[in-house]
Amino acid sequence: MAQTAVTRERLFALRETIAKLEGKPVPALAAAEQEALGAGNAPRKRGKAPQFSFGVPQLDEALEGGLPLDALIEIRTRMFRDAGVSSGFALALAAALQHKAEEKNPVLWIADKVGSIEAGVPYAVGLKDFGLRPELFLHASPRKLEDALWLAEAALESRAFITTILEIRGNPKSFGLTESRRFHLRAKSAGRSLLLLRQSGEEEASSAHVRFLAEPAPARERPLPDGSMLCGSIGNPVFHLTLEKSRNPAPLSLFLEWNPHDRQFLPVDQSAVTRFPGELAAHSGAPFSASLHRQDRPQEMGSLVAFERAS
Image (cartoon, rainbow, N blue to C red):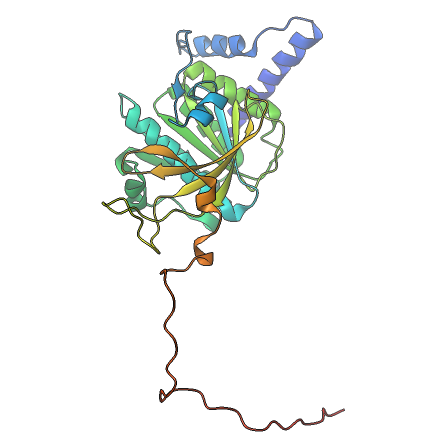
């Protein structure tokens, strides 16, 4: 199976090279559709690409209306310790897509083998609390990256999943610009989105339509029914996102809060997330003064004697 994916990749790159040498810029998407026709899979009808609106005017405007749902979307982190941020943002997107879709198709997570050992695997109870339906969530952990690429391509061609999440670690040589272009065209032809999680990856050339840099951000306090905030509490997760690649030339950085109950994103004021929870007091107010005559009060030290250090 992995050899089939490699063969397709080489054939796809060879077709592009021949077209450039002959001066015939044949669209690669048309070649992908012809291959789909030969396999018995009719391409979807052309029309306006479906989009997902975040409900945040600043972000939707930068994305020209919303996130395309028939493209390769990359979400990366600088360090592997921040894998929970990118994973959480990808799962939030999957939950929002699954909630708005008319047909409740499952979500497929293709995890990196080493990444699963270090960062763990999705937990069914946690998925439910996060807004996903565990019965509509599939997890796969292939042993090799080639197998993971083949599985992701097969998932796109099947159109059986509302979205596919492909997790890779770093910047492997076997997944470069050519592979990202192939996956983007596969997603375009199938009308499905592919969320690429690049854990601990550097910014590199990619055919992804949109690329986010995900960084951790402190959660806000939990709101009370009267509108006040519960001091010392931990509210919904917050993501610090930077739109690194899009058709908008100006970079955009913002904070988004994920509400798993309503399955929607909410903008967060940057001034509200300037400090992490460890830098804030759990309870506001002046501390109590220490008792002067308590029994467990430490005794004052007597005179000190200094000893010469032995040579």
